[in-house]
Every structure is written in structure tokens, then in C-alpha cells.
Amino acid sequence: MANLKLENKTALITGAGSGIGKAVALLFAKEGADIAIIYYSDDEDAEKAKSEIESLGRKASIYKGDLNDYQFCEEITKKVVSEFGGIDILVNNAGVQFPSDNIVDLKEENIRNTFNSNIIGMILLTKLVFPHLKQGSSIINTTSATAYQGHEELLDYSATKGAIVSFTRSLALQSKPKGIRVNAVAPGPVATPLTKDTFGEEEDDPNKPPFERNATPEEVATSFLFLASDDGAQFTGQVLHPNGGIVVNG
Image (tube, rainbow, N blue to C red; front, side, top):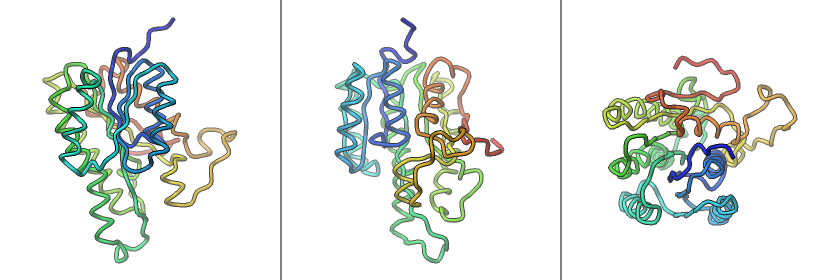
């Protein structure tokens, strides 16, 4: 039997009830990791993800709450460390978006929600998890091609994704002496429940060649596995771009 890339590791993944987060959780579980999931609202999706992970023979726990709530992040970090014996990999994947084609129509509430969910909650959770990480541990943040290209309907969302790139690079510098790697993944268009709910996109024909359709969450998840495993030992402060050929600088 081949060596599993994440054997005896514990991964804490946010926004893993569906989409990219769930695909990452399942791939990590297949490679030997136990999985803790933080999700915001969809109990049914989270329970399904949990049972799918357990069916792979791995331990799984799910925790419902708001990453912008510092006390919640504090409690969950303690629970995960207690239940799993530690945290080796943190995947900051949770995020929201509220499209608007005119800045005048942006709602203050939605702007604040987007920043709270996408970047402030990420920093709060990372701050609390960080003391539990050790040499060889890995943090992986989900950013987006919109951080590099912009998006005419996603002004505040794109701004948070740019902030995630800068946060990733800065934390990587701080973490180098500790032997903790910090990277990000910047997908292009991906067929997920979030993009379907936001833009009403129908699922692409999976028989189309990869570059002629939106990526599947599973195609993006392999970048996270690379960065979480020893394969990515030389990667820190970097962003991987599984985007179907969009040329970006960085």
C-alpha cells in the first residue's frame, strides 16, 4: 500500500460543508488525515460531509458557528485540540460574496459581512490556532483569481481576496523561523454551490475539456493537498493558480 501523504495529521477546515472545502476535506481524509470542519449554517451538508469522511475510515467532527465571533473561534480551537490531540493543517476556506454591478448599490451590511467572513474571521481563527502548530505544520488560505484580475460585480469580495494574498505573504515571513508553511490557492471560476447561488450558473458539461469549463472542486483540491503535504516542502508565501489558464502576475 502506498504511503498516505497526510497520515496521522489533523486538518481544521472552514467552510467545508460543500464546494471546495468539502472536496479538500475528502481528499485529505483519503490521504490519511482526520478532519475538523467549521461551517456556518447548512446542517444537512455538514452532516453529509462528516459521514463521507467517516466512511473513508477517518475521524470527523463538525462545528457550527460564525468565524467573526472571537469567543466561538476560541472555543472551537480548544475543542479540536482536545478531541484530536492537536492541529497540523489549517485550511481557511470559508467565504461569502454579494454581487453588485454598481458601487452605489453596495449595501453597508453586505460589505461588512464580506470582510468579516472572508478576512477578519480568517485572521482571528489563525491567531488562535497558530500556537498549536509546530514545525512542519501548514496553513492554506483560499483566495481567488479576482484578487489579481478584479471583478466588475464583486468589488468588496475581490478586495478581501487581495487582502488574503497579502496576509498569506506576511504570515509566511513571520512563520519561517518556526518551520510553519503558509500558502494560498487562487482558483478561477469553479462550479460550487456558492457561485451557482450567486450567479445562477448551471453546471458545466463535465465531458468538456478542462480548459473549456469551470473547474470542479475536486480539480482545485489537489493544489491544497500539494501545499499541505511534504510535496510542498519548498513552498511558503506562495499562491497556486488552478484557474484553467488565466494569466496572472504572481
